[in-house]
Image (cartoon, rainbow, N blue to C red; front, top):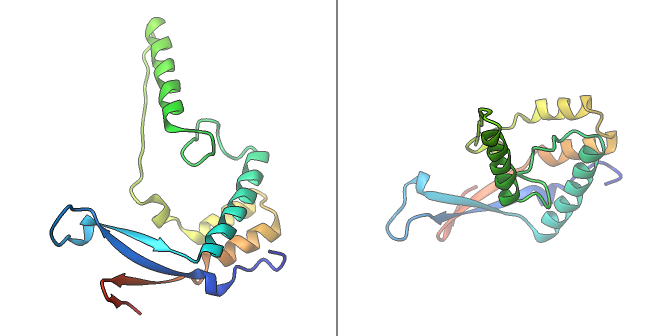
Length: 151
């Protein structure tokens, strides 16, 4: 952590695909890829995530309405709060507008260079930012399907 480097050997992911169908040979869109990393890598990432989460919370970068990835912010709690707001507005005869957005594969489409620029502008501590750059760059993966694997 002090050097701001994520170990290269921890960046290699083994990807296995799970069949979403109960039977038969699936098409590509009927499989769910699972990325497997070394256990120590996953534990280390959880530690770093806590550091990033703490920094974001302390700098009030996450709106209170954002709940998808926050600990102790469960979907039923968010649904209940929306229900309560709609109920209150109906009692007061106030129209309510709700917009729900679910970006398909949103995390797969993050522009890493722009993310780093944004984190820098938001004031992420240099050591943590350097570590995030190292974590994002030069990742590798191979796919295992049955007895065969890719390069």
